[in-house]
Image (cartoon, rainbow, N blue to C red):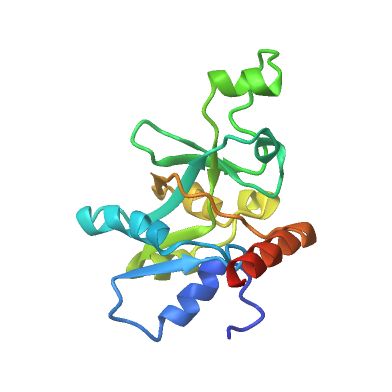
Length: 184
């Protein structure tokens, strides 16, 4: 649906959004989130409807499973006091110098995972595509780092919805089984 030269999800959505110039908010649902619930999209867009200063929003969820904390397939995020993103990484952040085992660590630090969906104001999405890719974005393979590097504020929306992202063949097998069970 988009030219092969367009590599990030948000860049692809921006290309398609050109067909909808009157859309005020554009939601980018990443293809690796096939089990996403509509209620999560509502949660994500709601703050933008009430605050015109929010240009980009994305959902996050508290990490409760230790394996998720250490999986490079699950991006982690740290946020400021107003729940704007400070940084995203595939590595557990913040790194804690004190020697805790992983269960003890999660008692002292709240870790959040990023869920692969974004809501953009249409004008912000167009501006995003004009930004050059950054070294951070390419190193972590996380397009939102392009925004942070350029001084953008990304509003994170804390959710209780758990999604199941497909990042590996094993993940795809799990999602196929979930879908089979729902259809039966």
